[in-house]
Image 1 (cartoon, rainbow over the protein chains, first blue to last red):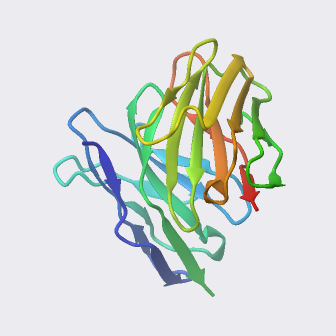
Image 2 (image 1 turned 120 degrees about the vertical axis):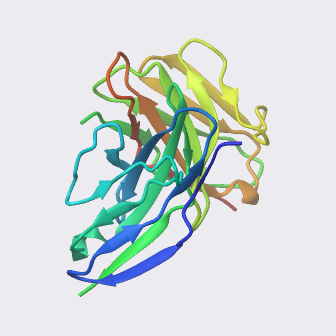
Image 3 (image 1 turned 60 degrees about the vertical axis):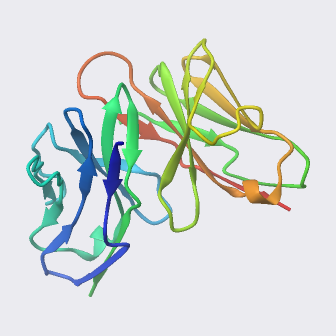
Length: 108
Length: 117
């Protein structure tokens, strides 16, 4: 069955430190992975998708099919990066499976 | 980007009453809308997928008679929690998917916090 896991519920790093939010998936089809972010008191919004291979707000994520992972990385974390991050797998059409989320806290 | 609104943003009701939550796509047409439920400190749980003009598809374990979904137009979907009970208290979020080709993307509403007394 399709599944998305994010092993860390909470991740705390100091400002300027590198950050990596882990995401692993299980899916028999061709995976399409996304990262969504939810800042405090704001709605969930798309951060980036693996197809675009883009860097948004300094974040990048590479799909590793061998390890079935899609970890989110940023070399130098900023305080404004503090938020809830969800990894999501697109099944078909617009149906997504979301991971449990990781709360990133960037300390001053 | 596309905007999705929800109304009301917060509602408190007595046990046994019904509550209707509206989800609107403000500047685009959405053939598909999704309803999620988010428990405290937990992820979003997909409840149902709503396609305009047809019956909603419910996820396993979601009672279709309790959570009535209507998708009457390309810009409006409603979720009605019937005979609400305290265990239905939660944060309900809708999302709308854009029409046409290109990269698939969902746009999320701000959510509705339901508290059943």
